[in-house]
Amino acid sequence: MILFQADDDEFYFFCHFLGLSNLPRTEFTAASSIEWTVSDPRDLIRTWCDDYINFINLSVIAARGLLQTHIKWYPPTLLLLPHNYDDIFKYYHKKPCIVCHSEPKDPSLCLICGTMVCLRENCCRQLAHYEAVSHSVTCGAGTAIYLAVNSSTIIVIRGKRACLWGSVYLDSYGEEDRDLKRGKPLFLSEERYSLLQQQWINHSFDHTNKRWVWHKDNL
Image (cartoon, rainbow, N blue to C red; front, side):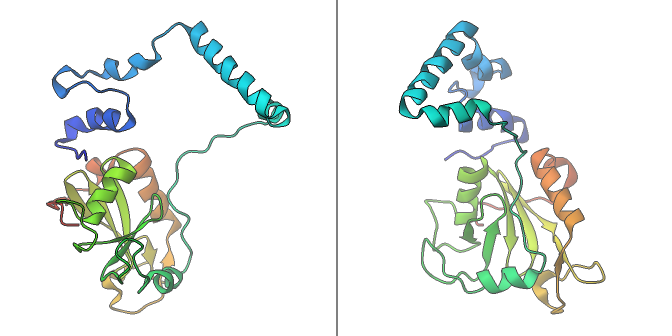
């Protein structure tokens, strides 16, 4: 299990997570992570054509459609959240965990893949790491964004650090209701959620969030 050791090492660990380089840290350079692309372009084209011919032999119609279909690529996005926070709360409150089958005291939803984790509980602990930290490694190479269902707050994990980002659900006056103490209806702030998504896509959490704490693998 790989966790970031320093901000400067993020690119190194990210390349290892993607399998782009197996060099030790002392020998790693940015150029070494793209050496897998250095080859004769004709070999790459020949390999693609061979695979496509095999695909044609399996299904001529599907292979023809692959070339005729216009493929539109979309950037990565976070989960599509409901407008009313009550929909999230009713669905996840007291929902059993799929790992330990108990009701989490602090259920938290990963906004990247939709997995619910038991935050700050050792029931789903893997070795020395609690579930939220372990999931941040397997899902986002050390970065994870969780919506704490019982408090409506966003928790961001970056390697060995974590911070409270705020909330993307606000009341009719545009105010947060952390821990749901006021009991006001909450609605999704498209502006805040778009900001959260842009910070995730641009890897800018380190520059936009200042109140980081060491989670000590206890999340």
